[in-house]
Length: 72
Image (cartoon, rainbow, N blue to C red; front, side, top):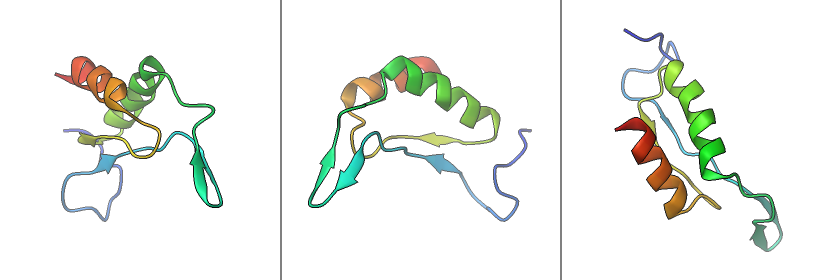
């Protein structure tokens, strides 16, 4: 069994990072993480016990596809 990310959690742990930064009134997507780099980072999270992966602002379908291919 994997070591849990948070000792207080009693269910699945997820990670859904953003890639960009906010400047009023809009998000800026200048330095968006490459899908392969997101997969590399996600592997570290999974090793820590993360069970649900996704993405938020700046993370698009190409990132979701890369995560799916890497973890299924």
